[in-house]
Length: 162
Image (cartoon, rainbow, N blue to C red):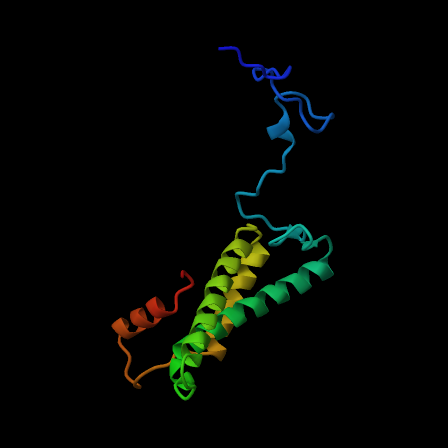
């Protein structure tokens, strides 16, 4: 059986698309991900367009991260206050609950990715924002008496994992 490959040699290694890269050096020229915590004002969050290179940009980024973590806790608070949506007729209540859940899960994963920048200041900003969010938007308690089981139940129903 004669198979004409039209002059293509399938055993030949493909040439690198970047002429400055030699054979076998492709992995060495790729940007490596930070895998340990660092202190630095230079950070890239979520996408390449969000980078900081000076203290003003870094401070504004940390403030944005704190606000985003507070927003996450606000979504957690709203999810726990589902009774305020009971007056909405039909499927409106379910639609609102679905949108809140989607927003909550999205912010959970985005906060995880933000922390994975491995920047100590960013990590502290996330923790600070979550703590401030708990202070501003506390868990709904059924009674004045709480037990360790109550606290565990509250944590389970509004953890940062979807």
